[in-house]
Image (cartoon, rainbow, N blue to C red):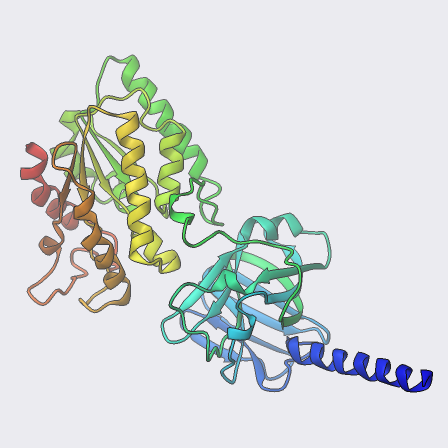
Length: 418
């Protein structure tokens, strides 16, 4: 009898082990697991890893993957986007949604001038990314580290994860060198890392932590604080303050001459920071960028980086914009706020990112009370009759040139004058 019980216990342990083996799905274990392949990726395309190494040589976005036998080495140079991707036959990720983990081992060799993020694609034109710059930089020089992220970090309401063919991408920006091993999906476990809640990130104040921004973002913020103090010390008042992202920052660059003609007489200030999302603008407001000022009008225009960086659903970007309006109303109760629609981007009206921006723009009029907050959509001034955006106005189909800033100033003038 005891022998039979022992046999049953042993069989149960074997079955339990088999169930665990089925639950955990390796993608790379010393080599790509059957059905999966490794590729080097940059904006121009991708190349599969078929031998000991693969590289995409380019003046920018150069990327190389070397197979070390038991690990992969990824290096990149002057990159806006370069990556190592594991892809294969579409996989049903839904069983991993509730408690699953994306796990791997990572060795950060050099990330002093680079950034890192982790991505999972969820179908055509659907990608979900988790920023990993700060955790990865903390790992530099510390050897192999185990990383496990909840699969739920890559999922949003309405996403279809029934057929995921690209479950893992390691993206590099700037310059960097890392090693990767033991990539797998686990049905359950304890995560070693976390991610922002996609439903609240747009309203949670934060600094802009990107590989290309860390060196200048805080110094620019401090310089703006000092400029405000200097203006006040000179007995001057800024009647108009512009707040936004790189498009607003462009008033100091491509739009400089237009600015001088139209706004210098108001001692106007441009508080635009390239790359800022709604949460980054909010952090700046909460850390003094309008304190001590008394403008008549604040011009707001931002949100396109919420779209471009994480393809955020319009309601969350709009919530971030509203949170900034509330902050401004508390800090500058006597100022009127002129809220502009997010400018068009992309060449054609059906551009995916422009459509997301338009979704935000449909919500924004509801934030105006026409007493303290006013909404204005000047987007048609940038577009042709078919909704096309010309490179003669926005050379990269996102940022205006001098002609574009002239259009902005001219189209906004009647409402601003009021």
